[in-house]
Image (cartoon, rainbow, N blue to C red; front, side, top):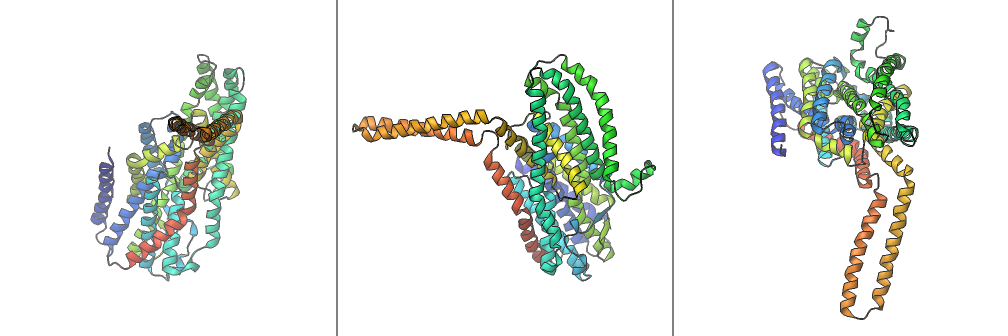
Length: 510
């Protein structure tokens, strides 16, 4: 499917949303602006699907556990399911409390303009990042959008700079934690299974434990992030649980522990049965991680849909609430049509534009196999659990991509001998080129000199190839630099765009 057709299909979804709003809410005085905001929300939702969802399924695709088509289908179903089933019925109108609604002086339209500008600017930035194949945080994009529009509307004092400082801290905390945890799990797999003489016997002991830990991590993660919006409903179904506004780490970990025990009981005999027919090699061990990877991709997608759909529907729900009631509320109910716009929009964006970033995360940073991808998925869930308990600000995008960085750099560290051999070969090649250059200076015959000059050019090309092999053996430095740069400028870029969009919208009568 070429880009023109994809764009047309994406536009068709946005037009369908606009048509519904015009038909259903014609009695609202500012229905035209609501329609425009709904289009912005649909566009933002598609961009979340195109960029952010790649982190959930990219490692599984890069490892060969899923095809891109299979990943798109699974992620679309679970993203939409998470958004619609566990996305909640109330959302904060100001994402993460970064600006004070009071600063709008009770003017709902100024607030509406700011939220619309935040939506559009965040979506535009995500479109650019996706085109550049840079996975960035959609949460940071909308945070930057809200901050920029808030500053344009009420000045710098409107921003909670302490909150922004915590968000900035996540630029470092998220990838470092994700990378360290992913590297730790890969090290366990390598040292306890792959570096053993009898890999199959080692796998019988270690793999069921690892899969059970994964079950604990994902059920804990799913409870904390996927069920927090519907926790009241869960408490009605399970009345023996302590009454809290959202799931506590203790309850979530308990759910995870029960799931881990059940998983171990079910998985261990199946692993033993499967291993009996396998060879004692790396490829055979990799097959044991395929089904857990598919499970992990599904759970991450469900939790992401439940948690991050607010990035698309939060500002849109705030706009609808303000226009419908002519007031500014700290929290707004999410109408079903708004949630459907977010959930379906994420799936549409993933299906149409997601494969580009899925390939980037799955194969263009470092080579992945099921064991490495498993370590990354584990890191994604466990880091969120740890961060939730410690109150640390983290980004799911930065965690997942940091996990990819972590396994790549661990491979470099563990294969220092192979890298050293390549460095030795590079030094010998450089010495060879220098010797040829010295010889060139001693030759007087023009034809012989020309032939030697061509030989030197050829040997220089070989030097460049060896140099690249040493530098980018396991992690492509260029991709790392581009992605980190995109992370750093996401908030200021979205904020700048948002301020410009705010002034344009405010100056247009809609």
